[in-house]
Length: 387
Figure (cartoon, one colour):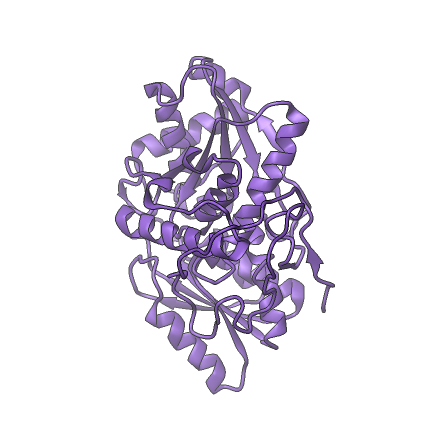
């Protein structure tokens, strides 16, 4: 099954007046940088075009995701800051949606152009990303092989049989469970899976963890920023800060580049959930610089543009602290909004703590990017057995 590719047509951009440094983003084994044979290669951006105008997009989402005010949460936290959520968790009918679909919209055109028949990706046992790749493979009529590593030392007996991994299996993905720990880099188990598909006559297409270090991994969240700007015009105000969970890096990196178009790159506040903040920050910067080159951003992206707070990832990746659990409960009980123990629960904890500490000046409007991930909470049934 094939759907016609579309072009992004939201907002306007500037023409780049200077050459940027060659991107250092690590590429997946079967991929080329944009402009070297990859699908969607962009020509020079001209005034009046948006930042993604020249890139092919495969539509996987409903359209602009809603922004809602979290009024009860804001009042509970003192009412000095207005808190809003952009509901990326409600962005599609594909297997509960989530932020990875926005990224995959700019990756799938290259997969189709490559004549691949199997999408191959990697994540933890309760990876949201692998669920989304499985859903997309089903939607476009490709096979899917998922490498699911033991990134989290779980205590729930059914951790590897519920939630995201269950949905992936239902959608027909081939799942390989691998006993390897957490890492955001290129993994040997994933490369082995690619060779395995080739050995049996398949045509694999490599999608790295989180769809992040793919050459087009940052583009989707450039589009997020352009979408927010259009919504701000309708709302009649601009957001002062954007809060986002950061692990493999391309969501944060894309936002940084997108909001750099109007000078707000340092207003994107990343909440680290990787517990490897130095490596994560370096990856965000690398992806952002590469993406800035692709979209011909006029502003140079530098290290200080990556704002990453590392106070909330403890005790380790995938394990929620007591404070994270309380943030999950508070948000659910005040707003009916579910956040997960791996990602959004930690970014919600971070945002709540920052509001309470006075990090955001009084009167600020804060936009919380809800990236999805609720199915993973099923893997933490023991933790939340009493609510």
